Length: 268
Picture 1 (cartoon, rainbow, N blue to C red):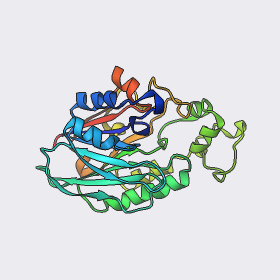
Picture 2 (cartoon, rainbow, N blue to C red; picture 1 turned 180 degrees about the horizontal axis):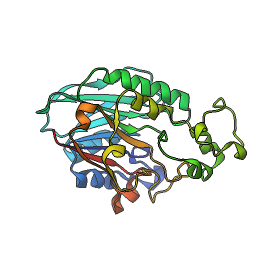
Picture 3 (tube, rainbow, N blue to C red; picture 1 turned 60 degrees about the vertical axis):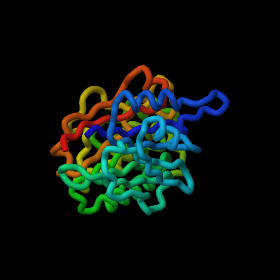
């Protein structure tokens, strides 16, 4: 089984400049995934991509942000599907598919873009959604830096308003000064740490190949400075079957979104 997570940036729409949907479809189609977690859907972009790729879609709507979805290969049997019923800023969608190893729960999530304390709550909701499930995979744009890396240089490279998204020593309305940046203890990594503390396995950290950064692509983005924000987390029983995990960097991926997709191979 091949799985992918992909933030497609504003549903692939660029206003009067047209869409990037063909490029997005090319990136996904070339990778031949069985399951795709999509974030930042808009309008009918999810429906268009599902039809173009001949995949089935389960979409979770958002009251404040942008919908997410899980696309599945029609050859896989879907046992259950629907949104994760929590007040996420964006959304989370859950699909359970039948595999030879047993039912596999796949969750596509997009955590809060601005406030670390909200991301922490949302990460805990994801942990609760997984519960005692033996085979589960949480994929998506988690908008959080990991707790195992020194992020000082990449934070210094960000404009102040975007740097504040990843720091935690003041209320979210406060504006940090330049002298406040630089100490790892102040980087807000709590959402990723919560998934790790719950026993979930960061697949790229476990078996990743190549550079870990997922944003920005050549399409750019002032809010990024060479950051890993997109993750695949698996339960330990599922992680035992993961063969590889990599960031998909291609010419099409450079133009299709401001995030690169992450792909993993699971022998299940």
